[in-house]
Each structure stands twice: as C-alpha cells, then as structure tokens.
Amino acid sequence: MQAVILAGGLGTRLGELTRDTPKVMIPFAGRPFLYYVLRLLERQGIKDTVICTGYLGEQIEDFFGNGRKMGLSIKYSQEKEKLLGTGGALKQAQHILDSYFLMLNGDTYLPIDYKEVEERYLLLGCKALMVVYNNKMDTGVKNNIALDRNQMVVKYDKESTSPDLKYVEAGAVFLRQETLALVPEDISVSLEGGIYRHLIEERELAAHVTEQRFYDIGTLEQRHVFEKLVDKVAQ
Image (cartoon, rainbow, N blue to C red):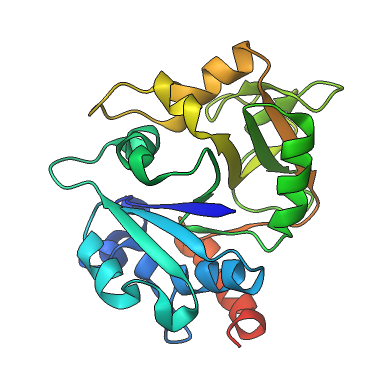
C-alpha cells in the first residue's frame, strides 16, 4: 500500500505558529505533528510514502529526508510556483503514484487499521472509499458528509448545516490514480470540487464509517486536544 500525505497548506488559522513553520511541522513533545502520522503508518507496515509539500516544504524534506531513519521510503512532490489545492497537489504528483493509494491529510491523525479499510476498498471495487466519522465525540469539525443506506456518499458540503449531513470526513481516502484525470493540469482545485463531486454523481465514492475519532490541528483548540494524546503515541 502506498500512502500519500497532503502537507502543503498554509495553516492560516493558527496565526503566528505557522508564519515560519509548515502546519505539519508544529511540534508536539519535541517532534513535529507529521512525525506521529508517519510513525502510525510505519507501525502498520505502510512504508511507501509520498509527501505533497508546498508552503515552506523544504523544512519537511530537511527533517524527514528519504525516510530511512524511520524505516520508510519517502518521495516528495513540491508545489513551487503556486499552491495548487488538494486536488492540484495530487495531480502534480501522479507520475509517482501507484494505481491506487491511501491519501491522508497531513494535519489529521486518525489511528485506525488502514489495511482493514484497504481490504474493504478492494472488495467493493469502487473508484474511491472515504473514511467518515460519526462525530459522537466532537472533533471541532462540523458534519459534512451524507450517506445513503448502502453507505455511498451522496453529499459532501462543508458549508451547509443540513440535517442529512450526519458524518464528517476523517482525513483518509483510498483513490484510484485514474480519478486524477478529472483534475486539469497546473490548476488550483480542491479534492471536493475537482474529484469528489464527480465520483458522487457516478456513485463511485463509498464510505467506511469509523467510531474512532480523528485529531485535527487546524485550530488552537484542536491542537490542545492532540497535545493530551501525545503521551500515548510518542513512544
């Protein structure tokens, strides 16, 4: 299994913390947040990793290098002239991506068994499988996903407060590389705008519902929640 981590965001909601530091490099117990994401993958035997970088991406490459010290093999795809959004970042990296891959948000920590999710993805045979959380334990991120009775995604909306949005994207999606054909070259576009809406229309975006909450560091409040978890994962 290949894991692709999106780590190019500006992290503007964190203010001064990300003025000179990429969001994924914010330290927790002396180690950058991205370290914990990578260590989770390594412990599950997921060693083939691509990191899509952008803002101050050289700091990420300088710290992690080729990944050998962590038992990983890391390649990089860097947005240099302009930020391309989540969809554009994947499009730029497609030449080093496998036929399918696990995509993770670099600012989200989701401690689940990814091989179990991969097995379901391959069994279903759909183009994409998104891990969604039922938000029973408030993550600070509002619900943005609606499912049908077959656990297919029928709506993805970050702005609406519609009651049919009962789940939240948990920052982990299995995708076929072929879906990147939906994204124009060298254009800034989000995954939801460039890929997910098409897959929803085609009924090709399935969901894997988890009761394991995820940890997002997009705001100061969410950072404090992850800080409380660090002692358990910093081994």
